Length: 99
Image (tube, rainbow, N blue to C red; front, side, top):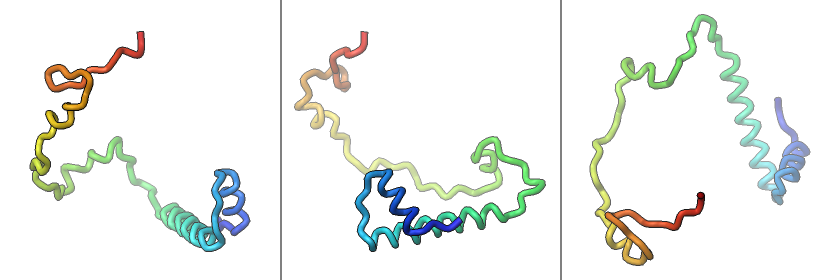
């Protein structure tokens, strides 16, 4: 399914976007590239492939490359709460808005 410049103009009108001609061409090429990728994925034979209940189901089979969890920012809680109208035990107090 390839889109035309008229399709892009219609979508832009519906979305209330004012696209310049160069933006229309760029958007057209991006969307057609996306649809080509979807068509390419749709062409893959998935017969006999069981769907995963969750992506994490394969974590035992894949080595994760995670960085160490390190604190990189200082604790600025007190400085952030100086201008707050009400603070209690490090938490911002706000008025109740739902009864």
